[in-house]
Amino acid sequence: MNPHARPALLVPLLASALAVPPVAAAQAAPVERAPAAPAAPAAAVCKLVVAPGTNPVEFDLTLAGFPSGKRVKVRGAENFERTVDAQGAFTEQDVKKGTYTVYFGGGRHQGQQQVSCEKPARVAPVNVRISEVQITKVSTATPDVDCKASQPVTFEGKLIGTGTGTVEYVWSGEGRQTSPDVKFTAPETPTVNFVVKSPTRNAPTDPAPRVSAVLRAGNASDPQAFTLTCKPGT
Image (cartoon, rainbow, N blue to C red; front, side, top):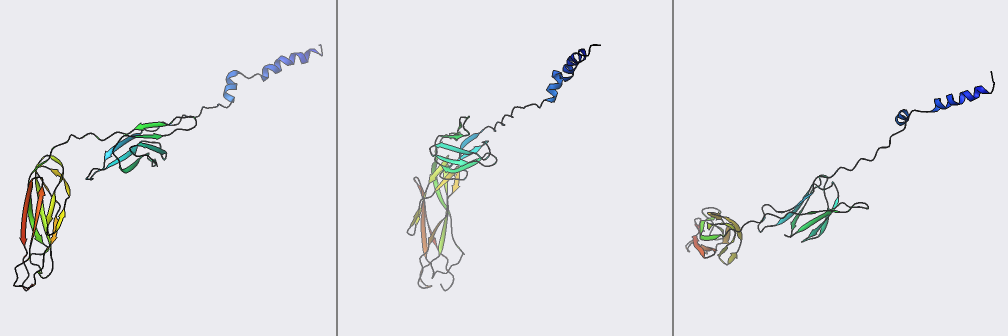
């Protein structure tokens, strides 16, 4: 046997032993996974809404569905920056009515996103016509009062007419006058109360004090006079 032939025979065997099948190599090597794409935020919504219970009407700007805790820029009739809460929401109260756009997101590799704010639905105007006003009640704190002292006298009233809308009316009497307004809804709507102070009388034999007031709205008016009932001896 040739002593130099043996090593030569071992070379191909050694090479085949070191060779790893492609499938096994793929299983053995660690797999590099692409980073997961960031979750898309919920649809961002901006609305300009009428604040409930305001008269005259005020407006709020409400945001929802924005990326949690992010800073946003609001541009429009007013300009400001705010941070939305953990739910991606925010409300800015008492803003001017107008057109608004909200800008958010952005960075080195991303452009800013923007959302146009929806405006309140246009409400068709409804004409209001006040045909009558009435003073419905006049009262003092108690039926009988001390007429030696000035007493508050309360007048209550209502407006009567057609339509729906804001109406201004006037209370006047005993040197006082107020001009409030009310959201009128047909057929009738109460007014705010009107309070005046009565004059005093010097002696129980003098006439009982008397007060008067007038309620006006448009061309309608209702004057009322009221005489106090005095406690004996006052």
